[in-house]
Length: 310
Image (cartoon, rainbow, N blue to C red; front, side, top):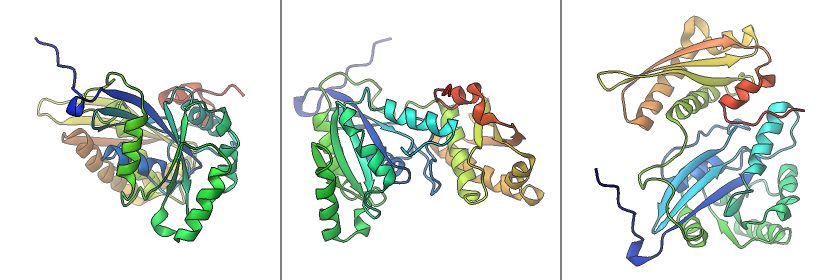
């Protein structure tokens, strides 16, 4: 069998490939921006703070460049072990990045969590870009003042104003990244959009539906794990997942009266998983109590986080 040919750069341009880390405070729109840059959903999005827990990589092409975007957990003042693991993972993503993009919610300006990020930007050796998000909701004078204030705080190679939700400004940002990642061969096939295993992607989709359904009631420390993934002869997939909570009272909330809540979560998750993997899906959800899972090293490994010892 012949090997696949190396993709050629557009119009004879040399191939480029690089990692772009998207960092910022919680809820500034990093996951929405990642999905806009890739052109499809690779990271879950909810209004709940700290929805993203581990590194999610989305892969996009722009001319002769392959861009590997790294969506990181929001950076904030950690209070518990899970918080420390997430913030540590976010900062760790900047070490190997070719470009680091700081995302700021232009509606709220510079908040305490933004200040904490700005205070450590000097430690990052990669090129840094400022991305003001949600600019469609802010008056131009306020945007200009915010831009000046932020550029006075750090050395940014460029500043972009975008709306990740509408897509405004995203193409220009993507083009800048494509021009500034280093020359080199592509690391992934041309049609690959994420490096996340399908089991992990399916678990993340179910967690998104869980958060959206129970945004106010859902305990912060709940998680979803894909226990079974079985390809069936008819081309469909049987998936069994377990939602872990810390107390029996929380399990009852997730189940809902007569199982109505878990059924609705399952139906929404099944539709999105099937669309993502382009196969029919049979999804079975179970809810179990696992006390103190936030202090269990194995659970951290399962969701791709380093376990903080302290």
